Length: 416
Image (cartoon, rainbow, N blue to C red; front, top):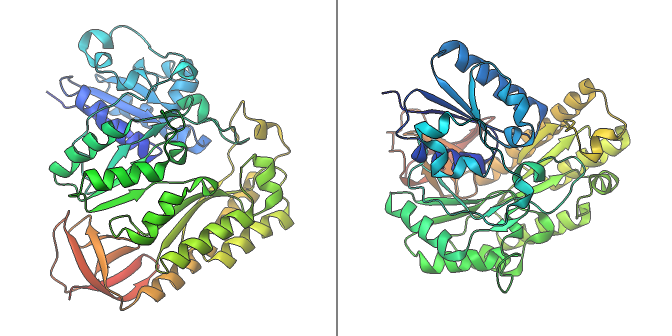
């Protein structure tokens, strides 16, 4: 019997959901599951390529396509050669979708906009990973002009505190020392729950109720929704990791307004200043889109200047990608070659900021979660590898190391 093969594209939430599907589909023979992403045209292209490759390499396998791209346009994916079934984002998480009988019943894609609950799923293992993810939230109520994801994920809905606590306890019991809270828009957590608790309150409760959890980390956050409890945890809780990944998207106020983001550059600068005031060593990352429609050279330079001025070491830069059905797709476009060139300039600025940030960490003791025997990430999410000649550690351990050098791949460290 061939265990199901799962190919995952996109975000950490998809990674979490792939593990849910792995558990549900464990009894199926000769199945390939493609968990797609719809954030960019490139993500969709890679997923289509994976479907074609799976059909070519394993022509007898049943191919199931799911994820955001499949939710948004199921007919397109069902038409690809070799695809047995297309499942929507709700259906993929239902155990009953993964029986032999269900595989022969055709596509199942319901109206995601009608979703009102985020169903709990107990996941205790993430294949090949030493860092675990826990879903705390699904969907998004915002309508940024470039983004199609709300139509793949539906409205924002929160996982109750008790379910999150149960999940994290199970992960810790399985040996995970670090958990990352994930979702589509995690800072909106609690808005649909009684009393409208904040994400910071969830983090406080979780750390209090699971004292054996060593490290809690957040995935991407909306700068204007960082609540006061989160700030207090950052200031005073050693188990709350000193890292923020900001959903920035642009460093130009005009472009942010055209994106219908809810922050301006001054808001983000204030967040960065406050974070560094509380934890000077904090690592800061950001998502940035290059070549958004109407972005001329002057507006691009505003973003580039903002990135350089703020010294953001961990950038995720994407050339803008038209998403059919979004308002931005109807705006005057920037040539793709220009988008890619601007993305390269932003990445270069991020690389320079990373070198400066890593230089500032030299000689300072860092606690690193080892992801392999010789490499891992620090609490600040700095990539660290052991120097040549240093005895290897063990994946899953937390080592205190001393950085002695850095290069374009991160820090090089010795064990004390």
